[in-house]
Length: 266
Image (cartoon, rainbow, N blue to C red; front, side, top):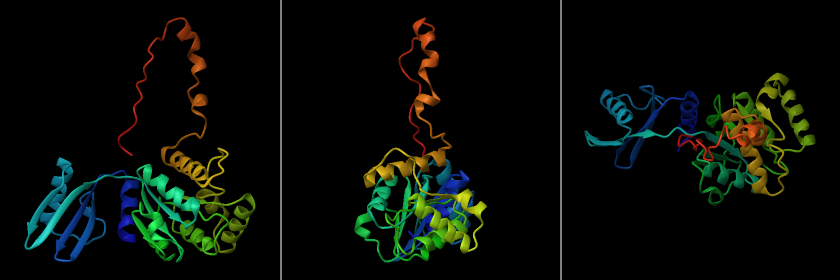
């Protein structure tokens, strides 16, 4: 998957619209595009007949394969899932990639020559070129810079993510390092208001995490809270059962089952 393709998925997911993936093959040549609201997001597919197939696939929610003039065309409805861009190669970055993938998110991993592809086999996209971060990030992107102890390219990654308009930019940092990095962004011309609106550092929710996996859990908890607009409170505070205890004791409410079910749509 290319950087442009990953970015297009992010835009499509953030729009809340359904999308279709089109793949056109002839021999070893493959062209892929995303159709959103009847329009090709990458501008690579313009044939009216193929666009008609995309509409048909969307209506039927089924993949369609046809051969057109020696070209094999596959049109498939695409599941819109959140995308997460992880910058880093350490233990926390690896744990984040595994957890984000387990949650059903599309994961891109960005490094600067330090990422081992075998460590991130679950990722949708891997690049060791930091410049690719600018091609991945769009408005609404979630970027997690997760190098424990920090790496020299963290400041560049942070600047790219913020100035490219990512809505959530997380930085793994101590309080002191966070302050130093904020100061560096201000020196680079980023306004304090913009930094406060986009940057989350130290990123994560305070659950007392110690291991890389626990820290990753605290970070992804904050990401989910951002996506789902959660309060960050304990559920027993949000839905305090003691407020209904008298009704339960008096027999006014007796149902022991729960109507809640997990959503099948991410």
